[in-house]
Length: 190
Image 1: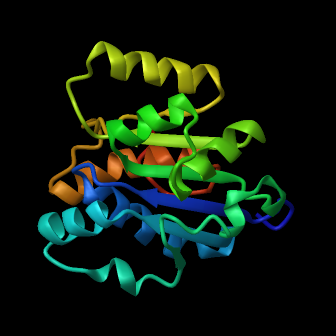
Image 2: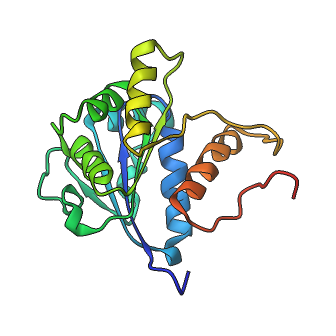
Image 3: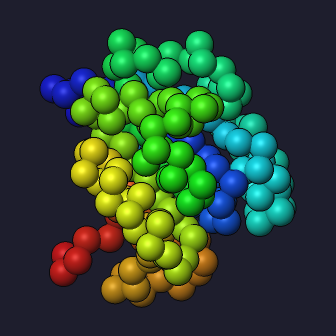
């Protein structure tokens, strides 16, 4: 990545089930720090509760990234001039997805997503909820048409994962690829 500019990445963690995906993504971003200039994290109160419930800890606070409150509209990534390359919302609740599709910008997560779309930068949403109803599908269509990427937390199994973490990593490796970082995740037929 010496020739290319290092990535500035926003990770938003919402209150949907699937904290393991956020944890594994943050772990990977630490490992890939040579390719990353900055990681900013915004986490909803519900996300903190779900993380504690699902993962049994509050270790999200241990990551070496700057965390921003969900109503901090002075955060650098609330403006396109800060030139963040990518935003990943993982897991992305359907409420968050719907507010992005509607363009409400009522908190920092939605505002930052709006900035990514208006600046034509990479916005990756990792919804975990299922099944989808027609409203969800239409909201995903709206975001896709606006330039966002919907990457549902749908694991693959051709790598023959043995643990829950290995299953979840199949999704996280796909997200890392979408961000544009070099990663040593499983590749089909290699």
